Image (cartoon, rainbow, N blue to C red; front, side):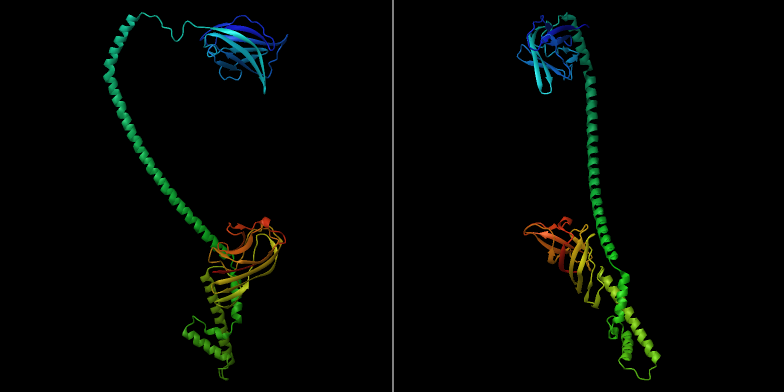
Length: 431
């Protein structure tokens, strides 16, 4: 189909009269405007421009067609603007005023106006098509009769559809019930899994603590210290607790040898054998006894001089990350289930040290036990804050913390420490 084309010449400054343009209301994609823009005698360049044409219709509304429209946009071909009028543009009969808008970035240039006339179409929404109606009415009557005869069939099909819908709804209901049961089972399974995960995590924590205890205990050194202890024990301790009556009597006889209660006639080799047997039993008994005590406590402990079952003293080895330091002292005294620890050191290289100093001689019984810091220096903290130390159960360590009244505790970070920080700590805790 050949369309209507209208060639229009506009100037950006002066109005130019154009021939009358008439289009018909309701025409679709058949009215094309070919517009050329001049600046005086020179063609106006359209390069890199966006084009809009504004149409002010007779019904008081305005339509804007653009080169950015998705549907039937304005086209630029060289120096010519091609615009196909949309049905909304020519929907209202009467005179339409129009102007071209040239856009580049934030700049806008508008041409002189032109006008077109929209003629009202004879065929529109109010048009009635002329027909021979009597044959049509007869046909409609016959069609209605056929429809009435088909009503029972249609109703039967509707009943089938209703039954099918009911069955489908029942199936959906059963499916939702099964889904609910499955969701409940999944939820219960997740709860069981969470409980299992917690049990595994707790087991791993216990395993880690046992691994730390085992790793922190030098059993060979324990036996060497106990054997050394046996060599220094007086023979008066031969009749210690846990021995049978026969053992006590035998040991008493051997003690008598050393106390001069044997006759001068006793052969020398008998005295030597009795003395050797007594000393060996002391070694065996003390080794067995001390090993049992360590097993009962079930935690790593210091290897200091043991004066009795209720008292022990010695040194311990503090580790502060990868920091190096000069150790003034790291001592402890254990009295029954109470352990007293002292520590004083001067940092020479802070490494990756933070708040935790590991290596306590015994694992604390409680999660946290607060200690005191007697002296410190070259450790950064804010005004109003104080430093304090506490024994930490999970890693058998000391922690250095900062606090202020009625505020949360914060840990000492690596940035708070310097390569010349020093600190002295005392803590007493139960095991």
